[in-house]
Amino acid sequence: MVNSNNNFVQKLFDFSFKEFVTPSIIRFLYALSLIGIAIYFLVSVFSGFRAGGGAGFMYLLLAVVVAVVGVIAARVYLEVVMVLFRIMHLLEGIGGGRGLASAASTPPQGAPTPPPPPEPPVS
Image 1 (spheres, rainbow, N blue to C red):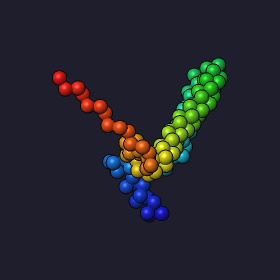
Image 2 (cartoon, rainbow, N blue to C red):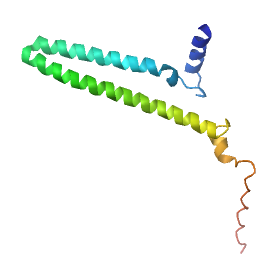
Image 3 (cartoon, rainbow, N blue to C red):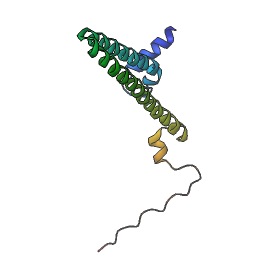
Image 4 (cartoon, one colour):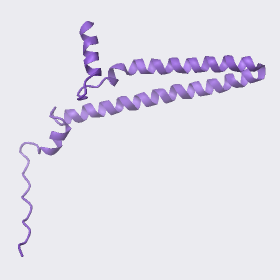
């Protein structure tokens, strides 16, 4: 357990960004967003009923709609983030672990080399 915490701290302060922190804390971020939505919901409902019965009912309906939309938006946003990380991982696999820049600049083995560009005419 100590090793994983130490590894997390190393990833957190790695300025080369070779390893990413977000995939390891995505569940925590989702839980944090759900807690924030729940706090919003409770505060909104309590403040609405404090203003009166009719206002409380309106705030309750509005808070339910906003909370549901908030949960859906948080989930979709975090799923998009994870999809981007998975795409990156798959692209690294295509490059043979050489990194994307070297994979794009180096032709595969056995591929024919392109002819050199023609020389400009001398006048």
